[in-house]
Image 1 (cartoon, one colour):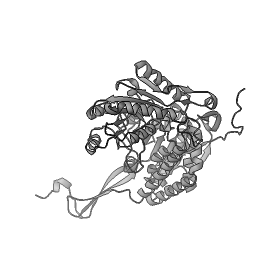
Image 2 (tube, one colour):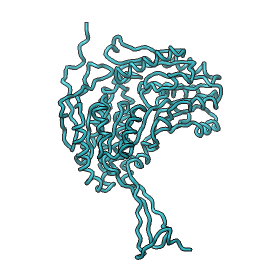
Image 3 (cartoon, one colour):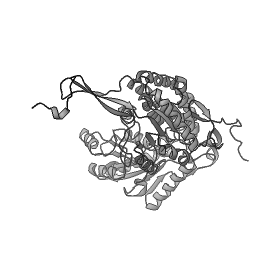
Image 4 (cartoon, helix red, strand yellow):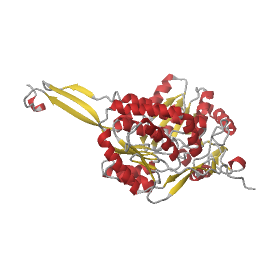
Length: 505
């Protein structure tokens, strides 16, 4: 007998937020946001928007920019600070909503919400800093300085894996710098962005300063990135999508920040604390069901400890509890949707066909409590050749490749031998080796005796090579992206001075 749906409550219908108003899409179309752990639950119904809604949102943001840019930065920061306090008050409710719509376990969604709170408090502090430069002029009776100015209307396209933290990385620094924004959330996780913007609304953000347009990439993302009045784009997504967005932005000279894929290595040397390394490997590989751009997807282990490490990793991976993330005893939730689950299973098949040894996992869970969700077992491949596809391509699921190596130089060569360069890690007790890794690992982030996940909001976040285009989120790097430099010269000599031409002999 079929199991009855878990709820008969009519799902809430959400509208776009444009110019301070909740509005339906002109097409009249909508899409369902479902719980990936139990697809019988519809978390909400959201507008399937298009170019008309994008145009309205950009126009509203343009009007709001004329006033918002003139609000003193400390006053803008006060709104962000209040929004962070509101997020803190609502942390549990918003975290539970996040688990329902994207699947990761509650302890992780609480961390996601906390990251947004931390980002808000940090960026609120920047409202009283926003440092520029004062420098001595090369001429007498002349003052020289550089100040920051906002860019204008900014577009944000955010992913589903960190549906509140990543929007906070983009919106908070953009707003404190004086920009206005349109955000397109991932269609799998729009509710968390609505909750985030609700906190900003309740904190007093003026109408038109922040706008939400929901929908699909080609229908909303493309007209948003191509709109002539959008002056900056911030995208977190796949390298393939980032390449398209970057090319589009270049044609109209938009500023563009791309945070893209990763294939992150964790090196375990023969002098490592194996207990600590195993803790890091489990968390790095299977936290967020492996659905992180910083996930530990390659573990490079020196041959002296390789067999022991692999055996213990497999033993612990088999014990992870899989299920609905609202259950506090669960270690790992589902894939975010059917397509991602199928990608995970496809790469598991690829790994087997390439000759890698599948040591545990490898299957979809679909019986009993799993029958209505997108669950894949934690999967460990051993004796992986670093040139295999499973060791080169981003999977974005609970699949980890363990690669043997001879020595540290061999490990670093393997670690650097992919097209990505986001995060990296090494486990060793030797300080000399640790500093060599800091120098030689070609990535935007390097951890010593910690896994590849766990960024802090006050440091730059981003990567090298095909992981991005050089900009950074987090810390002052975000302020750099959302501001333009203006050099200002004040000549109080009361005569024409011709800079280098008037240089005294």
